[in-house]
Image (tube, rainbow, N blue to C red; front, side, top):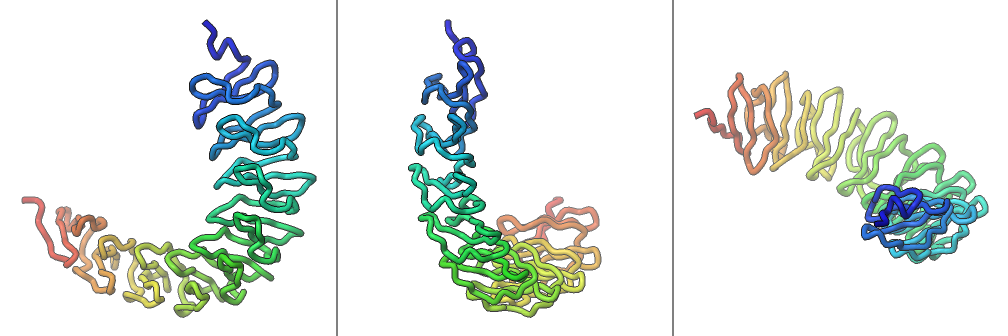
Length: 313
């Protein structure tokens, strides 16, 4: 009985439902039933990703889909795997993108590209960066020195050694004056000016003073900030919800955040009020309205009002 091992010269491991096979120094693919989905004719093959795989024929590259159909002419000098339904292709030293039908969505004219994320692809031309949308349209001038990918509808861009942001239409929402920035999240972004951190909102407005030595990830509408090696929180309006006085803090959960002061732990609520004495040796995050705490080696449960429940009985 003929097996895959006896039929082909080499069989790769299955990945994403397909295995590359070699016969007479040519490559193709089989599915999990052993059926050949394409002719065994390619000089080289790669791995399927997002339903497509790059193949090489006569020193040129293209793609086939999961049915084995060639979705584009095998004409490109090099390609990168599909990601987010677009593939990166290069021709005559220039780069562009094709879509899942094999259509070139833009001119193959860029010096480099980075694949799509959140609806936009990064492109570089003459040492400058910009973005195109999924139709291939340039949403901004290709003029920036550096860029981050879009997140929450905005992208950080660098010009003349300063950072700012553009929106999905390519509009610059703020002055290019910041020394460093973080991507947008929950409607605002951390920005650094003169070695201090602050925040801007989606309109580009600065929502707080630039005074913080550090900022941390936003979660549940609050962002941890550091000032003079102490920690606290600000809300989405930039207001400090508590004194920046704690030695250590944890993110809010069930409306309460663990805070550490003088080597002891407690909790604050979203108004910044300490719901209990800062006296515990160890605390754990709230879940379903209760948190476990340890005091003098004893386990206790507390609720969001700070009331204690002895669980040792």
